[in-house]
Image (tube, rainbow, N blue to C red):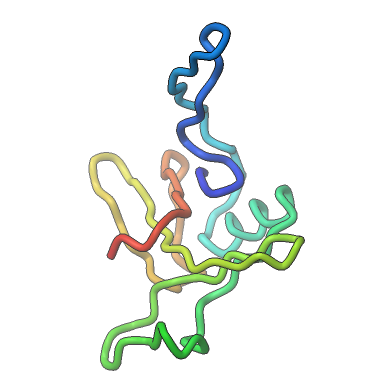
Length: 116
């Protein structure tokens, strides 16, 4: 898994004053569903990830489409809205808010910016 608390790419110091990007390995969880994976990530990084309910006036849910975003709340109360996608082989899947979405062993869950 990758997310705000465990980014895919970080800058590491190559030499004094210079940084270069470095790809991090994913945070590994043993989960069979998206909900279980998000719970494990949240417990490890002390964050709360829950389905977005449309409660922010400036960001309403779209009528006629299934809700797809999540609240990402840090322990200090900072909150953002994130999108969650699953990479399965060469496919990128958007499970929306389906916490029962079944994960396969090689799936990669990514918590990030709003992209769909």
